[in-house]
Length: 267
Image 1 (cartoon, rainbow, N blue to C red):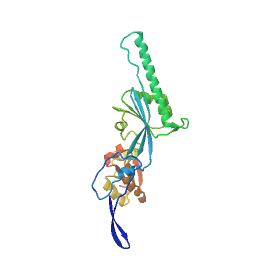
Image 2: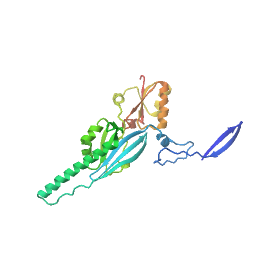
Image 3: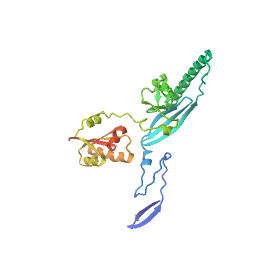
Image 4: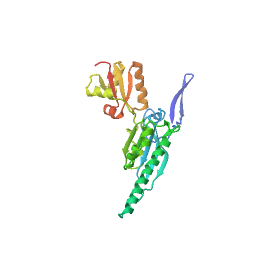
């Protein structure tokens, strides 16, 4: 419910009504707080620029291929393809029969990896396999199959120009297999890391200190975490008015410094 004062011909009247907000995607977070204003961080994340990644969950019996839609902190998984595999059973008895069955087992496993590699290419490539439709690829799973898929010549040939990460997971659930480092963009953090290493006097840490330095126009650059919320990001973008440059860095680096690091023009 919404309660506001409406002014008409210098007369104020109270209006009670409701505003229905329909998000573009399903809201997967629950949040409740009694406050004087609305908290719309989760909704605003859905309107940020969209990045699409690929995720392959594979083990010795099954493969699931997902499109991962990422807008800021908002993540959604869309199953694209699923493939089941029935491995050849091992022969308990010895002799030539066991060797033959062992050979068949390896050949069948190789065909499984070949099939999955073809499925990955057909899922994430277009225009006769000349265009990559994802920004990065994650291959996750329990067994050695994930490494075999990563090393497959088709994966290296078609996706060698984008980041490919391999991760060991306990199951084939995309939500449990995901972590923020899987699809984090590659950022050049060498400059700020060198300043930190040297304990440079120009560095400013803490949001309140950075805000003060920004207000007196002494900041040259603000390094912010790639996971900075949309609302805070919009506030930081105002720093451009003061001639301050905004640079995104890895969230792994920024998390130790309250999500952002400032660099002054001079010490």
